[in-house]
Image (cartoon, rainbow, N blue to C red; front, side, top):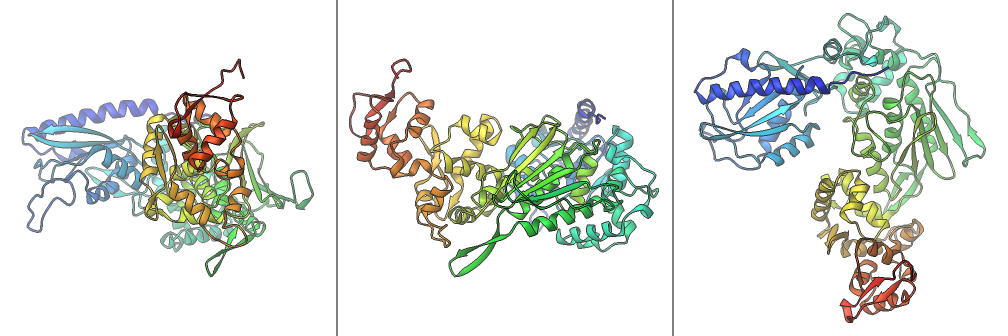
Amino acid sequence: MSLFDTHGDLVEARARLRSQVDEILAALESGRLPRPHEREQVDLKEEAGRRDRRGGVLPGERQNPQAVEQLAREVPCMANTPGGGALIVGVDDSGRVLGTELDVEWLRHRIFERVDIAPAVEQRLVRGERLLVLYVAETREPVEDPENKIRWRVGDHCVPVDRSEWWLRRQERAGLDVMAAVTGRTIADVAPGALVTARRYLISGNDDETADTTDTELLGRLGVLRPDGALTQAGVLAFCPAPRTLIELTRFDVPGGDVLNPPTDLSGLALVEQLAAVESDLLAFNVATTVHRGFAEIPVRQIPPRSVREALLNGLVHRDWMRPDPITVIWFDHDHVLEVESPGGFAGGVSQDTVLSRRYARYPALSDLFRALRLVEKQGVGVDRMYREMISFGHRPPRIVEVAGPAVRTRLAGGAPVVPVMSLMESVQPAARRRDVRIAVIFYELLHRPFLTLDSAARALQTDADDARSALETACATRIDDDVLVEPYKDVWMLSAAVFRRLDNDQGTNDQGTAGALIGRGLLPYRRPNQTNSPDVVQAWLAAHDRITSGDYATLTGLTQTGANRALDRFVPDLLVRGSTTGRNAHYIAVPTRSR
C-alpha cells in the first residue's frame, strides 16, 4: 500500500505563496497595510528585541536570540497550516517597515536547532529597508512549538489545534496514511492497562499535564481519538489488545548457543503494553557494571538504556505493519549485544549508508503518536541518539542494515564502558556539543584512524563535502578543558595533542581508566610505540598524498623525530623510496606498484 506523495502539491503551494508575498510587499511599498483576509497564510513580524523602554527602535544586529525565540513559535504554526505559510520579518503591526539586519544563515540554522524546521529565507527591499521572508512548507506530521503546543493558522492568527483534528484535516486533504485512517473501534475497545502504561510514559517524559486527564482527553491529545469518537488505526494498534505477540524477545548466552529466556506470549496486550514488558525484561538482562570516578562508584549498564529504547522504537515506528511478522529482539548475554529486526526493508530513500542523513516516516501518524507519548523527540533523531550514546561510552556505533526478508536489523554491541572516552566526552564544551552526533562520529573515527580527509569525513557523516567541512570546523571549535578537540594538520584533521595526553593520563578504576583500556578496545592503534613497524599509517597517508615526511609520521604517531625517521627507513625499499632531503622535511614516496 503506497503512501501519498506531497512533493507536487508543495511546489504548487510554494508558487501560490510567493505570489501572495509579492502582493503584500507591493502593498507595503505603497504605504498600505494588507487586509486580514490577505494575510491568512502570510504574517508580518517585527523583529523581537528591537525596542527600548520608551518604544524607540534600536539598531539592528546580525544575531538576535530574542528573534529566534519569537520565530521558533511562529514557524511551527505555519508548518502545521494546510499549504504552509510565510513570515515577513521587519514590519510592525501597523504596517510600518522597520527592516532587519539578521544574518540569513545564522537565523535559519538557529530556527532549525529549536524546532527542526529550516525555512527557506529570502531577502527583499521595501522602502529602502531590508526584510526577510521565511517560507515554511506544510509538514507531513504535526510540529510542536518550544512549549510543546500544536498551533495552526486560522484567519490571520495562530490558534491551538487538537492532534486528532490535525490528522483528520490532513487525511481529508492529502490522501491516505493507513495509520491515520478511521476505524470502527471506540474508546470502549481500549485496554485499560494500555492507558495506564501510556500515562507512565508521559510522566517519565515530564508531560504531567497530558497524563493527568480523562481517558477520552488523553486519547484525543495523543491524536488517536477523533472528535466523532472513532479511534484511528494508530490508536487501535497502540491501545487495543493485540491478537498476537508483536515484539518477540529471546535471550541467548552466545550466538547459536543456549536459550536462557524463550519468547513470552504477549498476545492479548496492546502494543504499548508489549513495549513496556519487553523494556522491563531488557533492563533486567542489561546488567550494570561499576565505574569508579574518583571516590564515587557509578553503575553503568552494558548498553546505554536510551540506545536500547531507540532501537526498539525505530523498529516499531518504521517497520512494515502490513506484514504479520513480529519484531524480533535478541539479547546475547556473554557478548552484551542487542539485535532488533523489524519486518520490511528501508523506505523513503533511506539506506544503511544514509541512516544518519535522511529522514522518512513510513507511517507519519504512528510516528507522531510515539512523539506525543514522549518516547521519541523529533523525526529521525533516534538513530542520531543511538550513535551518540554508544560512542560516548566507548562502544562501536550501531550497525543498521537491510537483511533478507526484507527486514532492517539494528545491532548494538556494548560491554564495559571505556572510562577515558566517557570522561573526555563529558568534558566537551560548549555542553550542547555533547549532544551533537557529528562531534561523536568525528571523535569515533579519529579514535580508530590517524586523520580524516574531507572525503573520509563525508563518508563517515553520510553527507556531502560542504556539510563535512562545516562539521570539521565545528569540531575544531569544540573544546576539551582549555584545549581544542580536533585540529587541522596540512590538508587533514586529527585529534589534538591535548586529547592524546588526556586519554593516556585519565585515571579510572577496574583497570579501565589507563591507556591499556584503549589498547584492549582497539582504540588509537596508530599511537602505539610497539606497533610503529605497521605500514597502516604510511599507507593511509599515501592514499591521499603523493609523499610522506618524517614530520608527518611523527605528528600522526606521536613518535619523536628520530623515531619517525628510523621507522620510515624500515619501510625502504619494500614500501617506500627515500627522497633527497634530510631532517624533519625528509620525505618518502611509495614504491611503484610493479616494483613492489
